[in-house]
Image (cartoon, rainbow, N blue to C red; front, side, top):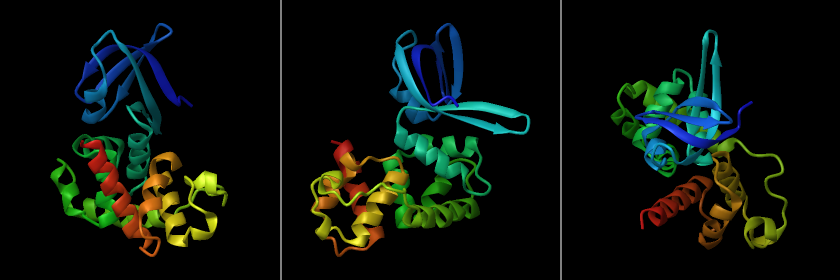
Length: 207
């Protein structure tokens, strides 16, 4: 499995980049957002990758961040959403915005992406909203206060724990999300905590 690539950027086009590693050029399909984050041709570059294999199709996809890669994996897990549709969606929205749209149930926003109809958009929200709020990562929370950004274990509600796990499913780390969750009302529902954390993260990144 090719987990990531780091080398010299030799080709940079809309939705496509080539990184040369050890004399071999690896072509990666990607989102416009990732391409925008790459430097000039000839500069050093790095991408997190996903090898897509289906029957006679083998393509390598690359993303600037683990969050975008995680969103890509979630999208292609949805019935009827292929890698091209997934990268198109991620070309229109950031990982934070994508997660917020799913958490808030805003399927209409996805129809703004070319090729994504109302039914597909609704399926994305339906399938991923359930997956994000119910899927957990085994052992992601140890109960140690230090592992939860300083939140005492006895003060950690089940909704806060579930929100942390859901955000980690999206590719965010405890270091990124725990300090925000620590400041929120633990009596809020899991969905409300996820939405508010993503909103605050997106607002912070826009500064």
